[in-house]
Image 1: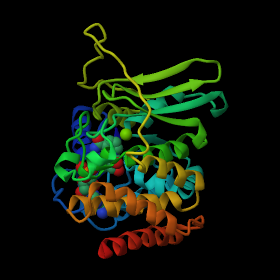
Image 2: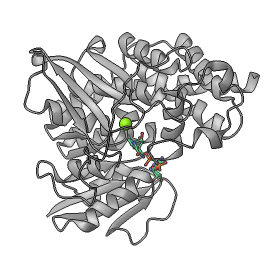
Image 3: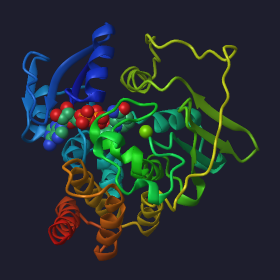
Image 4: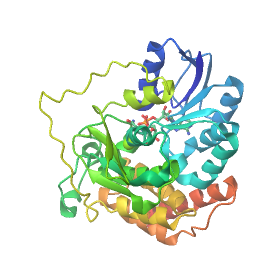
Amino acid sequence: MKRIALLGATGSIGRQALEIIEAHPGLELCAAASGSQPVDGLAPLTQAGGDLTDLLERAEPDLVLNAVVGFAGLPATLWALERGVDLALANKESLVAAGELALSAHQRGGGRLIPVDSEHSGAFQCLEGRSADQVHSLVLTASGGPFRGRVRDELDDVTPAAALAHPTWNMGPKITVDSATLANKGLELIEAHFLFDLPYDQIEVVVHPTSVVHALVRFRDGATLAHLGYPDMRVPISYALTYPERSATPIPALDLAGGMTLEFEPPDLETFPLLAHARTAGEQGGTYPCAFNAANEVAVAAFLEGRLPFLGIADVVADALAAADGSAARDLDELIAADEAARRHVEEALKVA
Ligand code: NAD
Ligand code: MG
């Protein structure tokens, strides 16, 4: 029996994970947590809000599924990595913000780090068992979000409701807005850099509107492996929870003869500059990715509250990056300071605007 601690149990990933765990006799939920919504009765140990590592200490899980949204998921990520407890990671923000600290904790702990993000789950499966020097490049696909094909002028008065109408994935509000701005793909670019130890110039992003191909790996011999499937997060969630078993799920097999065309195009970085900002922040390294993430979190929240226009999200993130110190964090306190500085910068900019 694999004992699972599910953090972010009330969210989009959390609810789908509950479904997978319930249907699998080899998986047992030992703990469940949320930010504030009630989780009583979901698991023997539950916690709403507060320091989730307290819950993890008590629960002694075999695997942590971190499906918290945002930087708030960082303590749980570090807790699992440091202790060598297997970590199924949906909370990409923690790896983006804390990349080097997280990787060294992972090295010390020695547990498994299995991505839940669909693109990274796909890439992980294409890469499995192969050394990085066999890889020519990794390709992450992006749906392009609800505003694909539009130009900047057409995004002036975009409402939160319009940004929340994602064409292919049904997700929590923060990641849905990130998908509309392409910040999500920027976070995923940095996530992939840390997960797969690949330099940024070996990671490409392409727009693929139907989200059937999740990732591709081009190898040095000219072969390319791709990961395909209907866009349904229960597949990567199940993969991560049951690894290496690859248990059955209710998701149907891919129907090719029914008619399927796979289209790819380059991302429009002029209209969706957050992807380019993320790449720059990733290449600059240090705490620039942390600042990118923090500024974006505050900007997205402000957009959803009607305090910032859609195009303003990229503007305030760019400003926060320009103002950031960026030097590498030697420990968690320094990382938290970099996160807070970027948040403050955006809050100040919002007050002035
Ligand atoms: P969501 O908003 O639906 O759910 C977030 C969950 O986190 C909720 O249970 C909430 O209570 C909890 N939470 C929020 N703040 C917290 C805090 N301070 N402490 C503890 N718990 C807190 O979000 P989601 O769409 O399920 O996304 C969760 C994570 O998974 C994000 O990092 C997202 O980028 C990633 N992800 C989601 C999807 C998807 O399809 N939804 C796909 C890929 C990756
Ligand atoms: Mg993804």
